[in-house]
Amino acid sequence: AAAAVPTYRWQAATPPDLKALFDERRQERAQRR
Image (cartoon, rainbow, N blue to C red; front, side, top):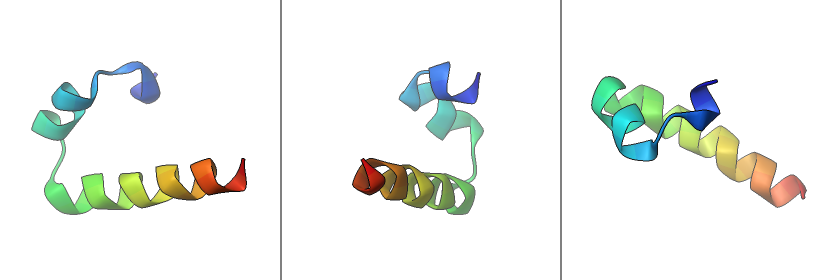
C-alpha cells in the first residue's frame, strides 16, 4: 500500500530521516534486480 502512494505525498508525510532510510532500501532492491 505504501508503495502505491505518490512520492510527493510520501515526502510530505514522512520525516527526512525515515524517508532516507526508505530510499536506501528501495535502492538496494533495485540493485538486486
